[in-house]
Amino acid sequence: MEITNLLLLSIFVVSIVALVGFFVTKTKGFGRFATSSFLLLLVLVVSSLLFAAGKLDSQVVANILFAIIGFSGGLFTGKELDSSKLSKKSQTDSI
Image (cartoon, rainbow, N blue to C red):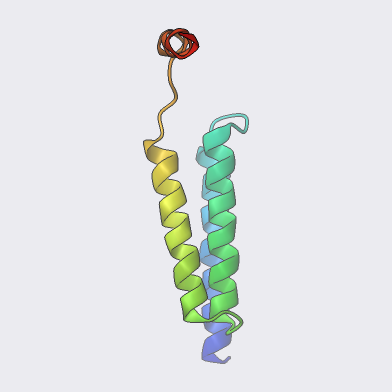
């Protein structure tokens, strides 16, 4: 087997383990966090497979990785306002 095939196979196996792990550990239902995490994981899997197959340039993969890091950073640090803060904010906005 060629080294490229072994690389593709190993990335595929790690990706399948990550996707199975995602579905095993997530709570029931798809909220904002679960859907975003799943989509980020899929983008990472597809882009890494395409890069290993030689279909994507390293600059494109770097841009994809930076976009994933930026989006996930905003996803993890973005906190939802509770209802009391939200009602206070809407009252101050209407004034």
